[in-house]
Image 1: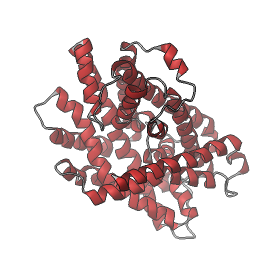
Image 2 (image 1 turned 90 degrees about the vertical axis):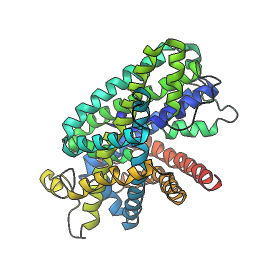
Image 3 (image 1 turned 45 degrees about the horizontal axis):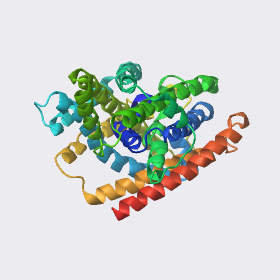
Length: 404
């Protein structure tokens, strides 16, 4: 779930651009990004399985300001991301079957995602996502093998080097390996699997490492393709950049290479639809549960039946947010995104990753958590670097937003 949801079409395009401009030189940034996301997801999962509380309950301990920020962000983020995810899923379908416009394919993808998540239990969603990950692995990694990577240059790229003009790409590679708000969803997926007590800590860590190493492999594969196949190309920014790659594959290897890649492109984009529709809806339903709790009421979720009654897929808030992700964003498929909305979306989004890393660092060092499960030097060091790194990325994004 983490691997398929976290890697979106935009991440692959950003990596393609970095590879086309700097070759293998920034491979080290992919590795660093993978390590930081492993540390962040491990912290999220550890909080869930050892504290008996969700991340939203943790934020409630820090004050209502944290819950308020998340609630506003989730409302705006869902509206904008819904349109982005549907459009990204529609692009490869339009390229394969141009009988429908992109916006109509986007509507179909949104409705299909809604039906799958609305009626699908977690076990069903996990099986569907497993199929998509298999398709992604064969097509994305297969494309990297097809272009024959330069292993000597790839090995040399492990050494940290910062070519002139590459800082923005380094920040993008480190910050873009595996999702933003969906990082916070990881603990809810562990709960859906029944991992609710400290005995699952080892399994959660193993699962987390496998998931984010997989995302790192996907991103590294696109870096290889960019370096070998698109060096010197002016790649279109945004999800449409993957269509450029499909056309280049067709020109160099024939249509047989273009079609499987477009199928993989769809798997990358649509798996994010399913993962976000489920994962972020779980976050929002739990936000509503925690927001309404009175001071004397328990925040713990070790009672599965009690939790499912007030949060999770069976609640009205979960289903309401699913509808919010699906139908209002369809209007944006026919309109340009309003300038003011884009500004607010960008500002709140830039702040989320330093917010997540910083709050996890505070919660996992709290005396309210059993001492044996608190963060030690390695976790604190990585989370501390994450806070600083994502703060720098946030400042860079905010500058970009307000300067155009």
